[in-house]
Image (cartoon, rainbow over all chains, first blue to last red; front, side, top):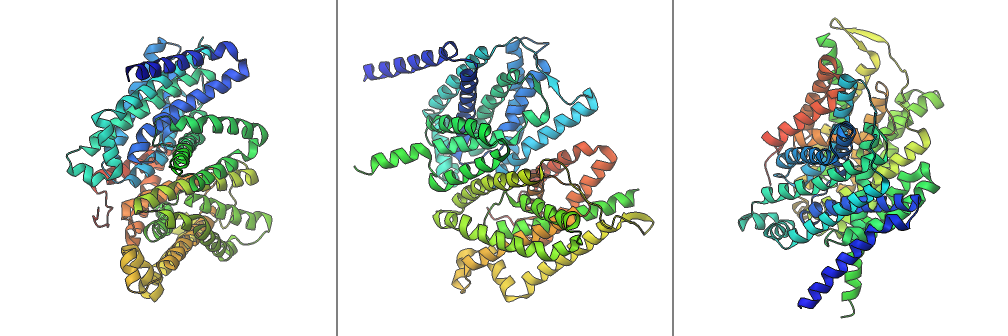
Length: 305
Length: 290
């Protein structure tokens, strides 16, 4: 038993070390693809961290991602980098707290509707502020952070999000959340403070999204509200998580890798019809594999037994 | 000034109420949370634009042609896209999540088609934009016409739902789908009918809106959002509540846009929504049931 655990830890460490070497092995194009995959891995895993157990569909990924990206754009030139990340996380926590406390007490639909418009709301507020106060709409992000450094930061974030998911799964909070997902009324009657648990998890999951945005911002050099708050990002994250399967921690990654490659291909081949294609892929997933790749595999493995 | 802003706020509010009535039919009766709802409105607006600019026809003709097409399209969407989900769903919550996901995909498909056809540019056309004097204020004739037509359509729907056998059946399904079956109502047909009717309503609203607002292919989500907010504010399934909530929203938006800043209208919408969620989550005229 002990040796099995030790082997597992060793395997994970080796995998992380291997992934950390990727920037030395790949060219510029390969590295940008790798950055894409790792950043979506963090986003999709963070998404399913909250939406998986609670079954509350959040459509606001890009709201937090954009908040992070904008924080970097505003502070990157004047403040030290760790401080920028800290501020981004702080703003993310604040917004998530407000959203969570006002909507998560109610049934899931209110939350979905609120998150549907949240990115648009934040985008309009940022636009309004930029136009009226700073009198510029776009911002340049000049930092000396290289692509490889972005990759490593994202990799650390990915490790953290998996660690968080792993620890939550074994904690009282994780148990409470699974109970809420199964039946909220029953959970409340067994003494679980459902609202508190949901808000805590929502805040945690959005911190990762905000940090991803903050780390990714230097990739763009120029950002404006339309780029930072592009709703396609929320949509992509949702599809990837669902394709992989949200009821296992490692599920979303299974969706991220094939879809990131597919979208790369579609974007290059059909730039003008991208959103139609993505929409169709998504509908196909919802109908054909509602429990994701992981669910599909588990089903096929179980059937012969 | 105040009167003019109020009048145009009432017009906008009337549109929101009409749009929300369609959504309350889809969500309240067919139990489908349709996130692609606003896309149909924009599609209808483009159709009216094409009628006027492409074919040189009166956009009001669009009001006769477009809603029946939208009715048929929505019926097909419900029948072939959503009914499998209805059959698959084990509970109402499950159906809600599934329909949110499916229609979210649909949103991007419809939006993508419109972007491919029309691009991201803003469209508008000038139809009946003559100033009228009304109680000392100036109103554009197209706005007034749109408001009158919205009232006629809304009133027609209200009478249809409250005074006919079919309308009563539809309302019965909204109250309790299981009990409705016990009194020999075909729930599946009534749901499909309500969903299609909702589509026809939003298309009619789209034609009306196109007469006095500029629109582009990305605007559908905003209308979906406002319709959802109005539905929740008014109380799910409540037509009168939708009317009141729609007017509140339209007036607030116009006041904020005129007297504070046009960039803050959505923020004002959200502030109202938050207030409703905090104080009266069951809606202004809704009953607490959960």
